[in-house]
Length: 373
Image (cartoon, rainbow, N blue to C red; front, side, top):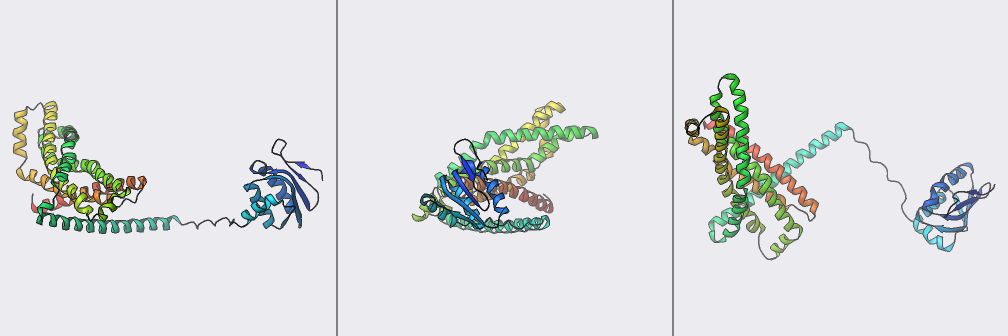
Protein backbone atom coordinates (compact mmCIF):
# COMPACT_ATOMS: atom_id res chain seq x y z
CA UNK A 1 0.00 0.00 0.00
CA UNK A 2 1.49 3.39 -0.94
CA UNK A 3 2.22 5.85 1.79
CA UNK A 4 -0.67 8.05 2.86
CA UNK A 5 0.32 11.63 3.64
CA UNK A 6 -1.59 12.86 6.62
CA UNK A 7 -0.40 16.44 6.66
CA UNK A 8 1.45 18.15 3.83
CA UNK A 9 2.81 21.13 5.74
CA UNK A 10 5.21 21.02 8.65
CA UNK A 11 4.91 19.27 10.99
CA UNK A 12 4.02 16.27 8.79
CA UNK A 13 3.10 12.69 9.50
CA UNK A 14 3.01 9.85 6.96
CA UNK A 15 1.41 6.43 7.50
CA UNK A 16 3.08 3.69 5.46
CA UNK A 17 2.79 -0.08 5.12
CA UNK A 18 0.31 -2.79 4.16
CA UNK A 19 -1.64 -5.58 5.87
CA UNK A 20 -1.22 -5.88 9.61
CA UNK A 21 1.90 -3.71 9.78
CA UNK A 22 2.04 0.05 9.57
CA UNK A 23 4.77 2.58 10.23
CA UNK A 24 4.70 6.23 11.19
CA UNK A 25 7.12 8.71 9.65
CA UNK A 26 7.21 12.31 10.85
CA UNK A 27 5.76 14.04 13.90
CA UNK A 28 2.84 12.75 15.96
CA UNK A 29 1.58 15.65 18.03
CA UNK A 30 -1.57 17.60 18.72
CA UNK A 31 -1.56 19.13 15.22
CA UNK A 32 -1.32 15.83 13.30
CA UNK A 33 -3.31 13.67 15.71
CA UNK A 34 -6.75 14.56 14.33
CA UNK A 35 -5.70 13.28 10.90
CA UNK A 36 -3.80 10.20 12.14
CA UNK A 37 -6.47 8.96 14.53
CA UNK A 38 -9.18 8.00 11.96
CA UNK A 39 -6.74 6.18 9.70
CA UNK A 40 -5.16 4.12 12.47
CA UNK A 41 -8.48 3.40 14.17
CA UNK A 42 -9.92 2.09 10.87
CA UNK A 43 -6.80 -0.05 10.27
CA UNK A 44 -7.01 -1.50 13.79
CA UNK A 45 -10.60 -2.60 13.29
CA UNK A 46 -9.84 -4.33 9.98
CA UNK A 47 -7.10 -6.64 11.32
CA UNK A 48 -6.83 -9.02 14.24
CA UNK A 49 -3.08 -8.63 14.69
CA UNK A 50 -1.41 -5.25 14.43
CA UNK A 51 2.13 -3.98 14.51
CA UNK A 52 2.86 -0.26 14.45
CA UNK A 53 6.45 0.75 13.75
CA UNK A 54 7.28 4.13 15.30
CA UNK A 55 11.06 3.99 14.79
CA UNK A 56 10.88 6.82 12.22
CA UNK A 57 8.97 9.22 14.49
CA UNK A 58 10.92 12.46 14.79
CA UNK A 59 8.56 14.09 17.28
CA UNK A 60 6.07 12.94 19.91
CA UNK A 61 4.12 15.00 22.43
CA UNK A 62 1.78 14.07 25.29
CA UNK A 63 -1.46 13.79 23.24
CA UNK A 64 0.37 11.66 20.68
CA UNK A 65 1.81 9.43 23.40
CA UNK A 66 -1.63 9.11 24.96
CA UNK A 67 -3.02 7.95 21.60
CA UNK A 68 -0.24 5.37 21.19
CA UNK A 69 -0.89 4.05 24.69
CA UNK A 70 -4.59 3.68 23.82
CA UNK A 71 -3.61 1.66 20.72
CA UNK A 72 -1.30 -0.51 22.81
CA UNK A 73 -4.13 -1.14 25.29
CA UNK A 74 -6.18 -2.40 22.33
CA UNK A 75 -3.54 -5.03 21.43
CA UNK A 76 -1.54 -2.99 18.91
CA UNK A 77 2.17 -3.83 19.20
CA UNK A 78 4.45 -0.81 19.17
CA UNK A 79 7.74 -1.63 17.45
CA UNK A 80 10.91 0.40 17.18
CA UNK A 81 10.27 2.62 20.21
CA UNK A 82 13.09 5.13 20.42
CA UNK A 83 14.76 5.78 23.79
CA UNK A 84 13.65 9.42 23.88
CA UNK A 85 10.01 8.33 23.38
CA UNK A 86 10.10 5.34 25.74
CA UNK A 87 10.15 7.43 28.92
CA UNK A 88 7.13 9.45 27.81
CA UNK A 89 5.19 6.32 26.85
CA UNK A 90 5.99 4.71 30.20
CA UNK A 91 4.87 7.82 32.04
CA UNK A 92 1.58 8.06 30.13
CA UNK A 93 1.04 4.30 30.39
CA UNK A 94 1.32 4.42 34.15
CA UNK A 95 -1.45 7.00 34.51
CA UNK A 96 -5.05 6.16 35.31
CA UNK A 97 -6.75 6.86 32.00
CA UNK A 98 -10.17 5.39 32.66
CA UNK A 99 -12.99 7.81 31.94
CA UNK A 100 -14.96 8.35 35.18
CA UNK A 101 -18.46 6.98 35.08
CA UNK A 102 -21.27 9.47 34.85
CA UNK A 103 -23.12 9.98 38.10
CA UNK A 104 -26.56 8.42 38.17
CA UNK A 105 -29.34 10.71 37.04
CA UNK A 106 -31.51 11.75 39.97
CA UNK A 107 -35.24 12.00 39.18
CA UNK A 108 -36.68 15.47 39.48
CA UNK A 109 -39.08 14.51 42.24
CA UNK A 110 -36.24 13.08 44.29
CA UNK A 111 -34.10 16.18 43.63
CA UNK A 112 -37.00 18.33 44.85
CA UNK A 113 -37.30 16.23 48.00
CA UNK A 114 -33.54 16.50 48.57
CA UNK A 115 -33.64 20.28 48.19
CA UNK A 116 -36.56 20.58 50.59
CA UNK A 117 -34.79 18.38 53.11
CA UNK A 118 -31.54 20.30 52.76
CA UNK A 119 -33.40 23.60 53.14
CA UNK A 120 -35.11 22.35 56.29
CA UNK A 121 -31.79 21.13 57.69
CA UNK A 122 -30.09 24.46 56.90
CA UNK A 123 -32.98 26.34 58.50
CA UNK A 124 -32.72 24.21 61.65
CA UNK A 125 -28.93 24.64 61.88
CA UNK A 126 -29.17 28.39 61.30
CA UNK A 127 -31.85 28.68 64.00
CA UNK A 128 -29.67 26.78 66.48
CA UNK A 129 -26.65 28.93 65.56
CA UNK A 130 -28.61 32.16 66.04
CA UNK A 131 -29.99 31.03 69.41
CA UNK A 132 -26.51 29.97 70.53
CA UNK A 133 -24.97 33.25 69.39
CA UNK A 134 -27.74 35.25 71.09
CA UNK A 135 -26.97 33.37 74.30
CA UNK A 136 -23.29 34.28 74.02
CA UNK A 137 -24.12 37.94 73.43
CA UNK A 138 -26.57 38.05 76.35
CA UNK A 139 -23.95 36.46 78.60
CA UNK A 140 -21.31 38.97 77.48
CA UNK A 141 -23.80 41.83 77.90
CA UNK A 142 -24.68 40.70 81.41
CA UNK A 143 -21.01 40.58 82.34
CA UNK A 144 -20.47 44.04 80.84
CA UNK A 145 -23.41 45.51 82.77
CA UNK A 146 -22.10 43.94 85.96
CA UNK A 147 -18.67 45.45 85.24
CA UNK A 148 -19.32 48.78 83.46
CA UNK A 149 -15.62 49.53 83.24
CA UNK A 150 -15.26 46.72 80.69
CA UNK A 151 -17.57 48.51 78.24
CA UNK A 152 -15.69 50.10 75.37
CA UNK A 153 -17.44 53.46 75.26
CA UNK A 154 -15.31 54.75 72.37
CA UNK A 155 -16.22 51.76 70.19
CA UNK A 156 -19.90 52.08 71.08
CA UNK A 157 -19.96 55.79 70.25
CA UNK A 158 -18.21 55.09 66.96
CA UNK A 159 -20.86 52.51 66.03
CA UNK A 160 -23.63 54.96 66.98
CA UNK A 161 -22.04 57.57 64.74
CA UNK A 162 -21.56 55.23 61.76
CA UNK A 163 -24.87 53.37 62.06
CA UNK A 164 -26.98 56.29 63.28
CA UNK A 165 -25.73 59.76 62.41
CA UNK A 166 -24.32 58.75 59.03
CA UNK A 167 -27.63 57.11 58.12
CA UNK A 168 -29.78 60.18 58.80
CA UNK A 169 -29.86 61.48 55.19
CA UNK A 170 -30.85 58.21 53.54
CA UNK A 171 -33.32 57.28 56.29
CA UNK A 172 -34.97 60.70 56.13
CA UNK A 173 -35.21 60.60 52.35
CA UNK A 174 -36.70 57.10 52.38
CA UNK A 175 -39.24 58.06 55.04
CA UNK A 176 -40.38 61.10 53.07
CA UNK A 177 -40.65 59.11 49.83
CA UNK A 178 -42.57 56.25 51.45
CA UNK A 179 -45.05 58.59 53.13
CA UNK A 180 -45.60 60.42 49.82
CA UNK A 181 -46.26 57.14 48.05
CA UNK A 182 -48.67 55.98 50.76
CA UNK A 183 -50.46 59.33 50.76
CA UNK A 184 -50.76 59.49 47.00
CA UNK A 185 -52.09 55.94 46.65
CA UNK A 186 -54.42 56.33 49.63
CA UNK A 187 -55.89 59.56 48.29
CA UNK A 188 -56.45 57.98 44.88
CA UNK A 189 -58.35 55.06 46.40
CA UNK A 190 -60.28 56.98 49.07
CA UNK A 191 -61.39 59.59 46.54
CA UNK A 192 -63.59 56.95 44.91
CA UNK A 193 -65.36 56.35 48.24
CA UNK A 194 -65.69 59.98 49.17
CA UNK A 195 -63.31 59.63 52.13
CA UNK A 196 -60.38 61.58 50.80
CA UNK A 197 -60.05 63.50 54.08
CA UNK A 198 -59.00 60.27 55.85
CA UNK A 199 -55.77 60.18 53.86
CA UNK A 200 -54.01 62.08 56.65
CA UNK A 201 -55.15 59.56 59.25
CA UNK A 202 -53.96 56.65 57.15
CA UNK A 203 -50.55 58.17 56.44
CA UNK A 204 -49.93 59.24 60.05
CA UNK A 205 -50.92 55.94 61.65
CA UNK A 206 -49.14 53.73 59.10
CA UNK A 207 -45.91 55.73 59.32
CA UNK A 208 -45.87 55.97 63.12
CA UNK A 209 -46.87 52.38 63.86
CA UNK A 210 -45.34 50.36 61.03
CA UNK A 211 -43.59 51.94 58.09
CA UNK A 212 -41.20 54.19 59.99
CA UNK A 213 -39.57 51.44 62.03
CA UNK A 214 -39.87 48.80 59.29
CA UNK A 215 -38.25 50.83 56.53
CA UNK A 216 -35.53 52.06 58.90
CA UNK A 217 -34.77 48.54 60.11
CA UNK A 218 -34.58 47.16 56.56
CA UNK A 219 -32.37 50.06 55.55
CA UNK A 220 -29.99 49.39 58.45
CA UNK A 221 -30.01 45.65 57.75
CA UNK A 222 -28.66 46.38 54.28
CA UNK A 223 -26.38 49.19 55.38
CA UNK A 224 -25.02 48.42 58.84
CA UNK A 225 -25.69 44.66 58.97
CA UNK A 226 -23.69 44.09 55.79
CA UNK A 227 -20.94 46.37 57.08
CA UNK A 228 -20.67 44.35 60.30
CA UNK A 229 -20.34 41.12 58.34
CA UNK A 230 -17.78 42.53 55.92
CA UNK A 231 -15.65 44.17 58.62
CA UNK A 232 -15.49 41.13 60.89
CA UNK A 233 -15.23 38.81 57.88
CA UNK A 234 -12.16 40.60 56.54
CA UNK A 235 -10.62 40.42 60.00
CA UNK A 236 -11.35 36.69 60.05
CA UNK A 237 -9.84 36.25 56.58
CA UNK A 238 -6.69 38.08 57.66
CA UNK A 239 -6.47 35.90 60.79
CA UNK A 240 -6.87 38.94 63.04
CA UNK A 241 -9.56 37.09 65.02
CA UNK A 242 -7.05 34.31 65.72
CA UNK A 243 -4.58 36.97 66.84
CA UNK A 244 -7.15 38.31 69.33
CA UNK A 245 -7.62 34.80 70.73
CA UNK A 246 -3.85 34.38 71.07
CA UNK A 247 -3.69 37.63 73.04
CA UNK A 248 -6.43 36.46 75.40
CA UNK A 249 -9.08 38.82 74.03
CA UNK A 250 -12.62 37.70 73.23
CA UNK A 251 -14.03 38.81 69.86
CA UNK A 252 -17.51 38.86 71.41
CA UNK A 253 -16.44 41.55 73.90
CA UNK A 254 -14.20 43.47 71.53
CA UNK A 255 -16.06 43.34 68.20
CA UNK A 256 -19.61 42.10 68.65
CA UNK A 257 -20.84 43.79 71.83
CA UNK A 258 -20.02 47.40 70.79
CA UNK A 259 -21.82 46.88 67.48
CA UNK A 260 -24.88 45.37 69.12
CA UNK A 261 -25.13 48.11 71.77
CA UNK A 262 -24.46 50.85 69.24
CA UNK A 263 -27.16 49.64 66.86
CA UNK A 264 -29.66 49.09 69.70
CA UNK A 265 -29.17 52.72 70.69
CA UNK A 266 -29.12 54.10 67.15
CA UNK A 267 -32.17 52.39 65.64
CA UNK A 268 -34.82 53.79 68.04
CA UNK A 269 -33.42 57.29 67.46
CA UNK A 270 -33.44 56.74 63.71
CA UNK A 271 -36.99 55.40 63.95
CA UNK A 272 -38.18 58.55 65.70
CA UNK A 273 -36.41 60.64 63.07
CA UNK A 274 -38.03 58.56 60.30
CA UNK A 275 -41.45 59.06 61.91
CA UNK A 276 -40.99 62.83 61.90
CA UNK A 277 -39.76 62.84 58.32
CA UNK A 278 -42.66 60.59 57.33
CA UNK A 279 -45.11 63.05 58.83
CA UNK A 280 -43.33 65.81 56.92
CA UNK A 281 -43.83 63.86 53.71
CA UNK A 282 -47.47 63.40 54.62
CA UNK A 283 -47.80 67.15 55.09
CA UNK A 284 -46.31 67.72 51.65
CA UNK A 285 -48.66 65.31 49.87
CA UNK A 286 -51.67 66.58 51.88
CA UNK A 287 -50.93 70.17 50.89
CA UNK A 288 -50.44 69.14 47.26
CA UNK A 289 -53.46 66.84 46.82
CA UNK A 290 -55.90 67.88 49.55
CA UNK A 291 -54.95 71.58 49.85
CA UNK A 292 -54.66 71.17 53.62
CA UNK A 293 -52.59 73.79 55.45
CA UNK A 294 -49.88 72.83 57.90
CA UNK A 295 -51.86 73.80 61.07
CA UNK A 296 -54.85 71.79 59.84
CA UNK A 297 -52.57 68.85 59.04
CA UNK A 298 -50.98 68.93 62.50
CA UNK A 299 -54.40 69.10 64.18
CA UNK A 300 -55.60 66.08 62.18
CA UNK A 301 -52.42 64.15 63.05
CA UNK A 302 -52.85 64.98 66.75
CA UNK A 303 -56.44 63.73 66.71
CA UNK A 304 -55.68 60.53 64.75
CA UNK A 305 -52.41 59.41 66.36
CA UNK A 306 -52.18 58.40 70.01
CA UNK A 307 -49.10 58.09 72.16
CA UNK A 308 -49.47 54.30 72.10
CA UNK A 309 -48.97 54.34 68.32
CA UNK A 310 -45.58 55.99 68.76
CA UNK A 311 -44.83 53.53 71.57
CA UNK A 312 -45.68 50.56 69.35
CA UNK A 313 -43.22 51.69 66.71
CA UNK A 314 -40.40 52.53 69.09
CA UNK A 315 -40.67 49.28 71.08
CA UNK A 316 -39.91 47.24 67.96
CA UNK A 317 -36.75 49.15 67.14
CA UNK A 318 -34.37 47.73 69.82
CA UNK A 319 -35.49 44.18 69.03
CA UNK A 320 -34.92 44.67 65.32
CA UNK A 321 -31.54 46.29 65.99
CA UNK A 322 -30.43 43.46 68.26
CA UNK A 323 -31.11 40.77 65.68
CA UNK A 324 -29.70 42.79 62.78
CA UNK A 325 -26.41 43.26 64.64
CA UNK A 326 -26.41 39.67 65.90
CA UNK A 327 -26.90 38.15 62.46
CA UNK A 328 -24.34 40.49 60.87
CA UNK A 329 -21.65 39.70 63.43
CA UNK A 330 -22.42 35.97 63.44
CA UNK A 331 -21.96 35.67 59.68
CA UNK A 332 -18.80 37.76 59.87
CA UNK A 333 -17.30 35.19 62.24
CA UNK A 334 -18.35 32.43 59.80
CA UNK A 335 -16.02 33.66 57.04
CA UNK A 336 -13.51 31.01 56.04
CA UNK A 337 -10.67 33.09 54.60
CA UNK A 338 -11.50 34.04 51.01
CA UNK A 339 -13.08 37.03 49.30
CA UNK A 340 -15.81 34.73 47.97
CA UNK A 341 -16.64 33.66 51.51
CA UNK A 342 -16.89 37.30 52.63
CA UNK A 343 -19.33 38.09 49.83
CA UNK A 344 -21.39 34.96 50.42
CA UNK A 345 -21.72 35.51 54.17
CA UNK A 346 -22.53 39.21 53.66
CA UNK A 347 -25.37 38.30 51.31
CA UNK A 348 -26.70 35.69 53.72
CA UNK A 349 -26.52 38.13 56.63
CA UNK A 350 -28.54 40.80 54.82
CA UNK A 351 -31.18 38.35 53.60
CA UNK A 352 -31.51 36.70 56.99
CA UNK A 353 -31.65 40.01 58.87
CA UNK A 354 -34.41 41.37 56.62
CA UNK A 355 -36.29 38.09 56.96
CA UNK A 356 -36.09 38.24 60.77
CA UNK A 357 -37.19 41.88 60.78
CA UNK A 358 -40.32 41.05 58.79
CA UNK A 359 -41.07 37.95 60.88
CA UNK A 360 -40.74 39.83 64.17
CA UNK A 361 -42.79 42.72 62.81
CA UNK A 362 -45.61 40.29 62.04
CA UNK A 363 -45.32 38.73 65.51
CA UNK A 364 -45.39 42.17 67.12
CA UNK A 365 -48.50 43.07 65.11
CA UNK A 366 -50.32 39.97 66.36
CA UNK A 367 -49.12 40.56 69.93
CA UNK A 368 -50.14 44.23 70.01
CA UNK A 369 -53.51 43.37 68.51
CA UNK A 370 -53.99 40.81 71.26
CA UNK A 371 -53.11 43.42 73.88
CA UNK A 372 -55.45 45.94 72.26
CA UNK A 373 -52.71 48.42 71.41
